[in-house]
Length: 319
Image 1: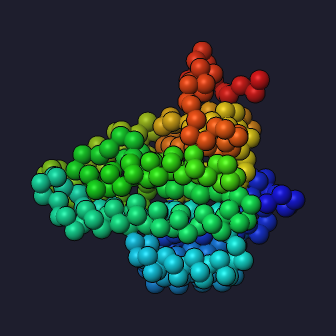
Image 2: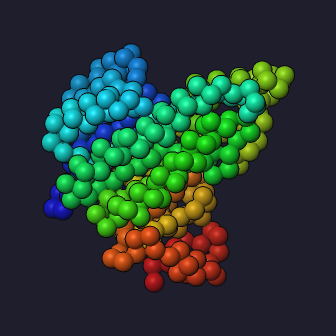
């Protein structure tokens, strides 16, 4: 992508992106953001109604009905998308479902498999098809949407948390594998996301514990410092930043893992000039944003040594 015209966040005009589950919710916010920055976007979704709404708002972009857990559907998506776009620079692996809420002994095995098939296997299927196209383009970005559940787990939401944990392993492994090819691989871990999905989860949990919906929502928000939910727009801003080459020049970016699950206020993968992108309610894992030769699968100890002695809130050193 050398020699392109860059906007303020570093995404070049005409960058080619696929956003899965991109016609509603987080995916729609991401697709809107990328399209607004001049990207050519293909979205897929399972909902025909949502796809129609996206197409009405973005007639210049392409929308395709896809079940990401289906090999055949994913094959068709990438065949159509790469033909339409003429290649690929960015994949946003956003598709996922909430899964069943309940005690482990009460969970239905079919619902467990469905959650992992859509939320985890779907990301694998899409990445496996995106990587050759991104490599052929000379490099680019894969962004996997996980969750804080992928770091801390959630009682009674075992299928969802297990899938999100799996996405972290997928992300870190691909980052080490693909860094030498110039492909940045990151995962964004949102907190409690505002929208209808979390309201269903809260309602299910309230019903199981015998408390009101309002009380259960209060209990959820009690775990969040600002007592409010993260918005889809917050997540779209971070995805937009990670889709650009900007993270490649961040401090410590040559190491396989440049951030753990700290809030943005204490992340070291965000340069000082981009502090405005930080969100206390949204986490980011940034793996292997720019591996130097020989660092693939490398050693975290040097990174840890460099961090010792810095305060948690100190900005990253440019020395």
